[in-house]
Image: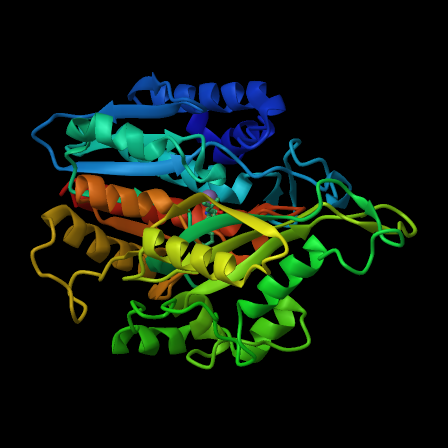
Amino acid sequence: MSFDDPIAALATYASHPSVSADPSYAEGMVAAREHVTRLLGDLGFAVEVIETPMHPILLATRGDPTWPHLIIYGHYDVQPADPFDLWTTPPFEPVVRGGRLYGRGVADNKGPQIVHMTALARVLAKNPELPLRITYLIEGEEEVGSPSFKGFLEQYKDRLDAEMVLVSDTGSPNPEQIVITTGLRGLVALEARFKGPRMDLHSGVHGGPVFNPLRAVSEVCASLHDDQGNVNVPGFYDDVSEPADWERKELLKMPQTEEDYLDFIGSPAFKSSPRYNALESVRFGPTLEFNGIGGGYQGKGSKTVIPSESFVKITCRLVPNQSEEKIAALVKAAISDRCPEEVTVDVEVTGGGDPYVVIPPGKPGSRGDEPELLKRAFDATERAIEESFGVSPIYMREGGSIPIIGDLKQVAGLDSLLVGLFTPADNLHAPDESFHLGIMEKATTAFEAIFKKLSGSS
Ligand code: BES
Ligand code: MN
């Protein structure tokens, strides 16, 4: 049985290079998908491969329609592994070293999926008729912004009449302290392209009267923050909601000081908006970041040129109550308004997603009328984590984004229980990504207890 050796199941899964962003990895996408299809088949699921314009979504089901219905979400795609030469061992040849499995995607998100599946395998081995209906949604476009997922949700809504979603695609501060993630930031991605002269020009022959597009992109970018550290876009903070008192208190339980955090990052100093300290800023505050900026000569030595074009890639992270459409429009307007009239600018919105927040049942401000399964899940998870890890979980929002979690709420009315199984030491999206085998083992035991409790069988 595949789940007798979960580390081997994960190593095989991670050996398939499922890089969704790069079409040359099409075979790796197929192989990873086939591996999950086999694993879910072994668990007794009926698996359907739903075609999309890009990478298919796996929809797998088990159980009786009269049973409580849980959706489990994961993604089989991974980030590109570049730069390859910074990996200690090749990214798609997973190996165990010092209590960790190394390989691209082992933490984000293949390892956490194996944790859920192994726990289910153990529970189902003892009780094949476990009265819990489960629908698995494993998509292949998460790392490129899930462009097909919302359309899929609209089309398959009827099949998703569940009470809640379970996801492990978020983080915890260290292998001892598990976090239940209560919110994710939203996202707006934009690209601005500045155009000046018709072609690159000799900077001596033409320099003087011609406005350089690199100067335009620099001036506009420099205007987008004030010297305090706030985003300088009119209306940007208008809809931002303040964290609840209990959230600020939970943050104090996090086993990390601002100094530890700065030390981990390695910058000489932090600069957040004065509205937040550094630890609050990544969880409760919105941002505008430059992800890439370019134009002109990037080669060796110097070249005397006035480039014809320049560009900047920007992403904003959004917090609850901010809307993707509204922020996209505000940032677009600020860039266009500030573009010097001697060049033109074209701003394209290239992706996005709304922020998400869930108030754990029983916490101040919770609705009280949450589905029975969701209440049971939060309660069971807190207790199972206490038992397996010896410490209660912390309830905390995260800075990262999983846009489809907001879509599941909007389209299907579903809230998510997000259990964080990777840690900052796992190097997500970076060379030497790894998954901590101690977390893997303890979390598998915890999820066995969680699945039993969800089915009402303990
Ligand atoms: N698993 C991450 C999101 C994440 C990371 C949540 C850390 C919480 C803590 C996910 O795979 C991811 O990287 N998402 C992208 C979304 C983007 C590509 C639309 C992100 O956050 O940048
Ligand atoms: Mn992920």
